Image (cartoon, rainbow over all chains, first blue to last red; front, side, top):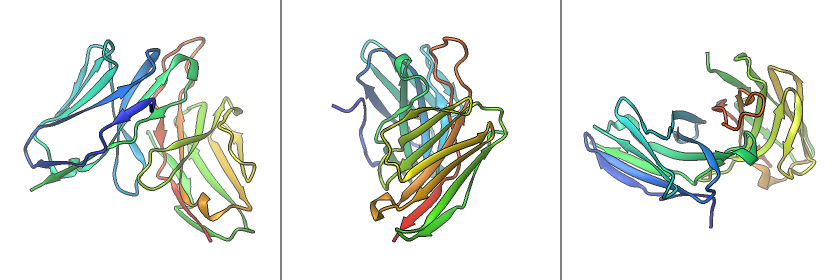
Length: 111
Length: 118
């Protein structure tokens, strides 16, 4: 079983719609959680860190469920520019600053 | 300024060549990283430098040789690479978690060097 798992998609989303997807992690000692977005042939860019209480940044909402060991990302009012691969990233204390990446979820927003 | 720069953007090299990838950041970060990313795969960690010292080597073949000349610069020296080493090489930087802190600090990625080995 992979340490961080994501549905690879693609999620085909009409412009203006809401899309949500999850990421599960296997290490219960995981402590830091992030969502990065990566455009084709570009570097990963931090979208948001995920906090225990959940957090929102504009149209993006991230939630953490420690009991079930998953994090989620919800995108409201999807824009064409939201088309990207969303990488779930996790780290845990014993790993120092080492990040573990999920395989990514591809989102395609269509007119 | 959350910018990490990498040069060159593209590199084509033969299996007998020696080349170097360069990474620079001016965010005052004291941790720097090299990742390798193949198409449609997530980044894979290669090396971590903390306070200019190598702290993690993910069993990377010796044909890849990292170097951290100072706190702002990170190099990756390449020698006798194989075609399967062709990939996007990403540099990242972050703060180092302070004194016993267990929370990972956010890593910021450079644009990468797209390497092709012929």
